[in-house]
Length: 158
Ligand code: SF4
Ligand code: SF4
Image (cartoon, rainbow, N blue to C red):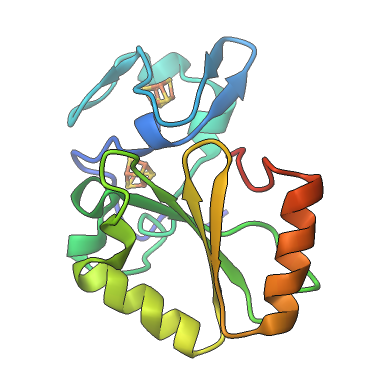
C-alpha cells in the first residue's frame, strides 16, 4: 500500500462518522468513539483496532481541497470496491447528522456536483439506514434502488 498523500492532522471526524466492528470495539455509526479525544486523536492509538488502522478516507488519499478535510466539511468520503454495475465509479458521502445539508455546501458541494456531471454516482449516507443516490445514469439509479431494498445497510460498514 502506498503512503497516504496527507496526514489527518487534528481531524478525528471518522471516529464519529464511521461504524467500527472489531473484537475490541463495537462502535455505532455517528457517535463519538469513547477513545477519541475530539480534534486531537485516538487515546489508544498504539492498540487501536485493525479497521481503524486500515481506514483512509478519500481526503486523506489526496482528493479535494484543504476546506474539504472531513472535520471542516462534516462529510467523510469513501469509495467501495469497484462495482460492475457502476463502471464510472461511486463515491460514498457519509454526512454528519448534525449537518445534514453539508454535502451541498461550499467547495465540497461544487466538487461533488462536478463529479456527478462527469458521470460519477454519489451515494449520500445519512444516518444508519437513510440513503440518497445522486446520479445522471438512470440504469445505475435503478440498480442501486433495488440493491438498497434488499440490503438497507449497503455500504454502511467501513
Ligand atoms: S476522516 Fe479522514 S482525515 Fe479525518 S481522521 Fe479520518 S481518515 Fe483522517
Ligand atoms: S479506536 Fe481510536 S481510531 Fe478507532 S474509532 Fe476509536 S478513537 Fe478512532
